[in-house]
Image (cartoon, rainbow, N blue to C red):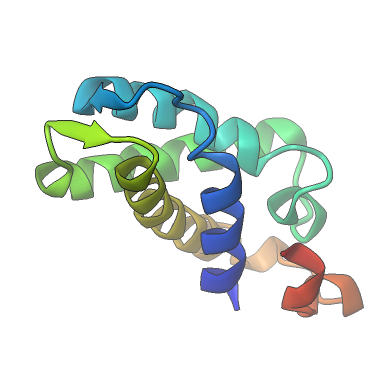
Length: 123
């Protein structure tokens, strides 16, 4: 379920961040490092609504997991990304990795309720 949430979430939110036709890997990594945690942790988003966390705890955890995932996938990210296709693809990969890691780190704070348990609420 989390993969569907993260994939949809990242594809819709992160690919729109870079408007250039081509961006460098460094630009992409810089954007993802700051933007992904901010997007994950907006008050109405899954990662805030379905985990018993403060905004600061959410952002710190999301920033940490994003950095780890960017490091893990760095060798696979091309030096030039053609937008929006490459940005969406790699944004989704980084988002899935960071979202899954976030869920593992904060598993004990995951809320179980009708809203959080239904993937259709997060499309």
